Image (cartoon, rainbow, N blue to C red; front, side, top):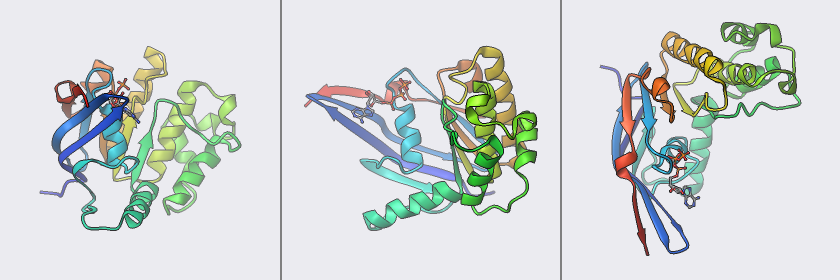
Length: 227
Ligand SMILES: Nc1ncnc2c1ncn2[C@@H]1O[C@H](COP(=O)(O)OP(=O)(O)OP(=O)(O)O)[C@@H](O)[C@H]1O
């Protein structure tokens, strides 16, 4: 059996705002294997975005351990931890947000090229990725010259062009109309199946969540109190 791309053991994170303290995840443990998809659902404030931020090193857990592609961070100096997370994000973890976040001064194809280059991938396949995602005809346009759905397809092309082991997607279709959202989701799942990467997808959309292999509902793992 293959090793997990991602494993999480007893993960917890708390925030304090004024006298209010919110604890999320409450000792979460999970694994995601190559080719698997996990939907993270739960009511607003249950910790979906926090979990994704922890899984790519943009936040630090209060407790627990995260291992990505066999790399964990026990006993490592904080500065080294940041550098190692940055390297994982650069080469192995593709992140997709609700908004496409393309570089406005670059055409779609140059956005894809830049992301692939940063990941150390060879040049040349950028137009192919845009074509596979249905925006080949828009490759030379700039982000402000395409629709939201086309921009999000380009954002997915950027992620797949880097050949990630893991994709973290936070409401990747949340800003799109129903039909466009379904089309972008079709692209995401088809490409994920073809490339065999792992996917963790946070969403409020039950239809989108039901397309994943596994479901994690964080609703019950939030605690609030005053401190
Ligand atoms: N920087 C912060 N400071 C204080 N509280 C925070 C901070 N970030 C998150 N929280 C709190 O942690 C909880 C989880 O937030 P998070 O954004 O992860 O939830 P979510 O499930 O993604 O919500 P939504 O579905 O609304 O996007 C919320 O109660 C939120 O207010």
